[in-house]
Length: 266
Image 1 (cartoon, rainbow, N blue to C red):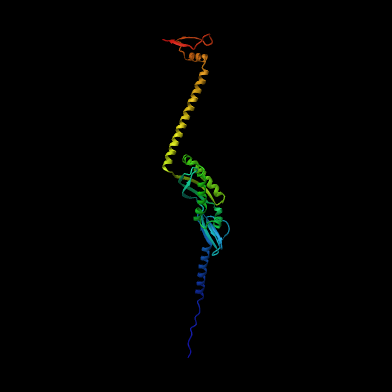
Image 2: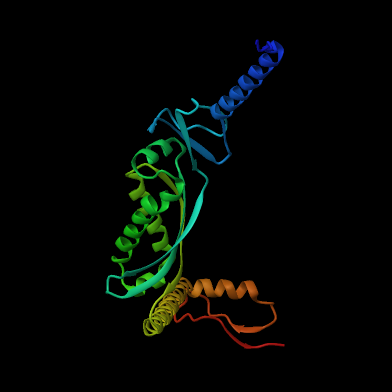
């Protein structure tokens, strides 16, 4: 007994089409893995098998090696972070305030930040900015007494900004764009003492100003008195005399000469 076998001949056209679809799909996957876009305001750090390779990639379309290289974005736009702090003054008084710092990661340093400090830009503030900021705040405020801090708040804010910038420049990771100190909180009894001292200083300044004005007036009158001799007075009188008023014309230079005196008039 013989069993009939049916010969099955593969369809050559269908196999080629399947292979083409598979190759196209693989190529699409490779292409999507090789191309990536860096958004505006960011740079990308590219690593090859875990090691940073090349400089930071700029915004736009970029290329990497599929499955070998990885991409880590870093935001380089200006960041604004408030930091509430408490510290001691030179006279050992506790103050509380808020320091709002504006900073930005330097685009060229993103790779170095990734290699040495942070894998993400979210870690830049707690690992780079915050320690330097708190160090600068304590360093500056420990140099001044509470009264000076309250009266020269804006000057101290600028000093803190410069100190933070100098501290961060040592590492060359970020740029400090600005710093504002707000919300100064001190004990109520010290606040009243500061206000009284400021009032006293204003009153002293006003008194000193009045003394200077009086001294200037006295000097002006003294100078004027020295310049007004008999001849000058007589000349001034003649310039104003209407020719009708009766006077005693004691001319300057005569013996016993006196300033002309008005004795009557029509």
